[in-house]
Image (cartoon, rainbow, N blue to C red):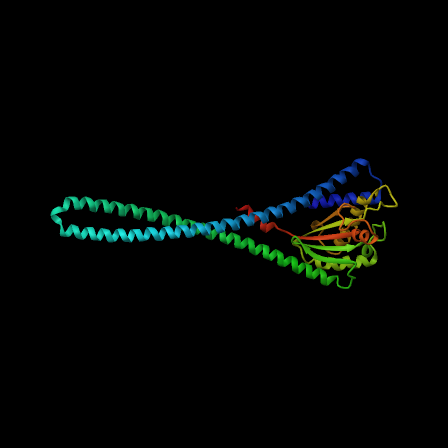
Length: 317
């Protein structure tokens, strides 16, 4: 998300938090929220496209290696033919020396053999040039694939290191209050409602503030990540509606925004953070028991490595 868009969202929230707004402004904020979710989906699609490109390149490298082996065998065959022709040429020349009186026919035979020899040598030069060009192209592609593989390996290692840092930073909290895991190349920090909020509230509790401050300490030292804060609820409608909060979707967005502010106040770059709310529409369990409803009332902080260098290399293909 651009700095301008982040500023707009912050400004919009301040307006919503401090005064009444028109329906038009409210609708515009919803549009900006949807746009933000679309950008997140687009980034995930771009990552999938990048992975598919890498797979195709690896297949191309394998094909080029096979072609190179075929050309090498052809080269060896032509080289053997050339040796045979040279041997034949020497034999005919010897006959020429011995049978000089029959030089007319012999000269014609010799000329034909010389022409064949020249043609084979020309073919050999062409095949050799093709083989060298293919070898150079293969070397370039292998270097690019190696660079891509190294970038991906570095990204995966950075993700695992980030996950370990986040886990260590939050060791003093109960296991049922939060979880940290790696999925699809991203670090997911899932914080339960009881750690952060009272029921129906958008104000972070003191214990939740402490957890977010400890998390911010880690995130502020890792500038090469994008941070998505997603609010989630169960399917129970909110009990107290207000001018600014009419349903679970509003509640999830406002909770995500509250968390974003705490992270930004504790050193995390505001331009790297996105606030998002999914209400009751992305549950991790069926809303059929009190225990499952509690699982769905959560906040997920999704940490994604920036892929600018990877996309730059893919653009060169």
